Length: 151
Image 1 (cartoon, rainbow, N blue to C red):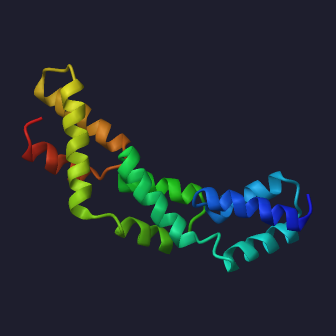
Image 2 (image 1 turned 90 degrees about the horizontal axis):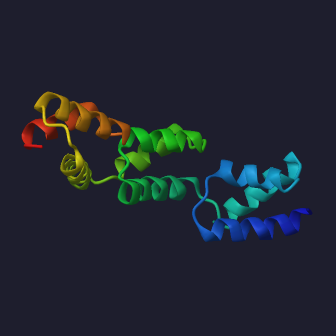
């Protein structure tokens, strides 16, 4: 595939949803472009504002939090897998509203508590704790909410 055609196809790929530079780079290599062409297309996409790593990081963090209920740890891991820089990961994580974050964790814990069949309080609390950990939430925050609310 030639560079001009690849750029047009990549513009459509980026216009559909926010993408990280690494996702676009992988896609371009998958289309058979060589390194010089890939980097040139990525530079063009950045210049034309089709590709913006900060915008991607913010959209990723907000989407994973709101739609999937992920916590900060899991979002951070996802962004690292997408090769987003550490400063941009920090910006994305700090963009999450603390009040909404706590409310989301509480609603996740309450929903899980309704489904949990375990009756022994200690085991029950441990299962809820493990579930929230698997969603990427911080252990101190989970414990605080578990202790403050009767779940």
